[in-house]
Image (cartoon, rainbow, N blue to C red; front, side):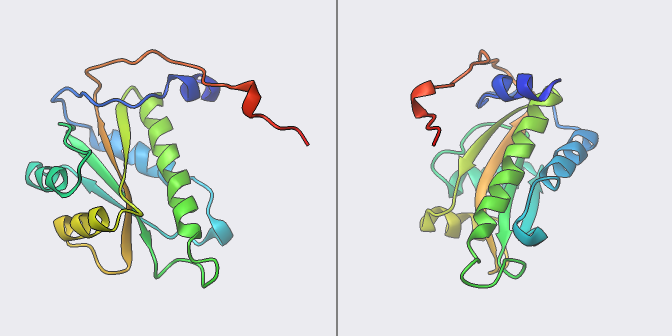
Length: 168
């Protein structure tokens, strides 16, 4: 698929079939994630790929908006031990967000559906996800990406709004 077509085709998918996501597809998603840009090439990310039904259920309980029956979840975390020193520490959010978008686009490209469910900076959600996964203190969950074979197919769309473009 061409990139511009994937950009417009990528939509949040919240209904999935029961078919599992293959190891090959997971590998494609992880390669895409780590192909993202990173400030000073710090790469302060960690990816928790969740296939276990029990752990997926624990994640559903940990947050308010992730109760969708996807066969796979990817929890994108910032690793503060790899983050840039202050005052640049919070660039991990941008780095992990770029990795997240790459996962979403790669999922679209290979025919999977996905939805980005934000966690950080909601302190309660962060704490609940850390407990559900037993994360080390320095791993901060930015989001949960639910992934699977889509059971719904939202129409592609172009959300371009010329009024929001300011050429200086």
